[in-house]
Every structure is written in structure tokens, then in C-alpha cells.
Length: 313
Image (cartoon, rainbow, N blue to C red; front, top):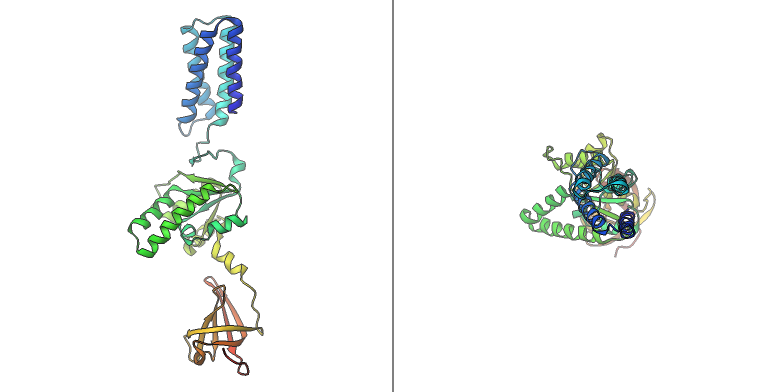
């Protein structure tokens, strides 16, 4: 659209050169260009883009025609240019419903695959790796109020959380520089909602987007509001190898379990394994047989028993 506008300006200048009215046309181009820039930059919310553009450019024409004493063809040429630039400017002005930076997201097609990141997913640290694999496409959005939340944690939180927050801010910079996605920072705040989770839900409704989070509470509340949630922990659990009763595993027992004679170890993917008869093998690797697998919202737990006939390491 910018090139179309420039083409129109050059046509106006060309016409003025051949007609001998170069000073008049140059003045018209300058005034229209300045008003066009101011309109696009300072468009007010909740006003139709086309209506605002038409009113502004009509006012410019109303001032220019008598001041420059334009008559005949020149007058109609300016009026045509006013209508033309109003239409083009309206197409370039962002929608009033979406406060996005640095590039506007006013088109519906750009909103269909919007993923909104909360503080928990940014501080988790895995989001960049997931985006690089291509599992998250469309537009990635980080609300400004989430960035402020992370900044407050960085300034006032405990040392470990401060490190997490600093890493989260660095991840935002990495996301901004990634070419494989469209990254936006959303300026909509919904300050009427004091709770950050409620702001996230209000923003997801406004953008018709999906929330990407690791927060269990936000996950549940958003689901009740019929907002689609992408939970990275659920994704990680889904990607863990399937363990079936009767299979044999090698596990390093690292501590005592809750029940008597139980030992606890962990698989490489972090899955907790509770072994009956494993208490006597703390600090050793044993061969065990899986007896059951428990899946709960916090993750997966595997239960098994020590194979008495196998040697320990």
C-alpha cells in the first residue's frame, strides 16, 4: 500500500509538471503526505478508520482548494486524491480492538493462530526450543502486563526466581528475533481485572487466541471459560515413553519411599518410579518389573517391584 501511495504522489507531481502548476502540486503533495502520516500514527480508538481518514482528508482539501485558488481539473484532481488516500489509509490503520506492537494485527486472518504466553511458560525456559521445532506456529503474543509481572519478580523475588525472570526476559528477546514466527507484544492491559490470570483470559477472548501456560490454576479457569489452553507440561507427559505393566526397567534407587520397604528413583525423563522392596538398595541400580502406572494431573508415576534374581549395580 505504501508503494501505491508513492505512485499516486508521483502521478500528481508529473501532472503538475506537464500542466505548469508545479508549486501548487508540490504543496498539495506535502500537505497530503503530512496529514496521511499524522492520521496513521495518531488514529484514535473506537472510530471507523475509513470515516476518520475521509473526514481528515476532506478537511485538508477544503483548506487547500481556496488557499491555493484551485479551479477546474486541479480541483477535481485533488478531491479524487482525497478519496483515494482516505481508502488506502483506512486499510493501513490498525484495528482499534488490538493494541499490538511493533506491527499491527488488525486482520482477522492473522488472529486465527494466536498463541498468548503467560509468565509461567516464559520462566519455564522451554518455549524457545518448542518454537524452534515448529510445534507452535502462527502469531506468538506476549502481553505487556506479563512482561511487567516478570520484571517485578526480577526486582523483588528470591534469588532463584530472579534468575528465572532474567532468563525469561532474555527468551522474549530471542522470540522477537526469530524469523520462523510472527512475534508481537500486546499493549492491551484490562486494568479493570486485578488478577493477572483474569487479564490473560480477557485478552484471549479479545484476540480469540490460545493461552500457552504451565499454570494449573490458569489452565482450569481458562478451560471453564471455553478458552483453548496449550499446557507444555501436558505435552511433555504425552511425549514420555509408554510404560506397561510387566515390562522390566533398570532404575537407580536414590531415596526411601513413603511406605515401608519402598525405594524411589527417576527415569531419564523425570518420571518418578516407586519400587517395592527398593529401600534396601538405596544408592544402587536395580532391575525391576513394572506393576502399575498412575497418571494424574501432576504427571505420571510408575510402580514396580525388585527382581530378586537379578544382580544390582
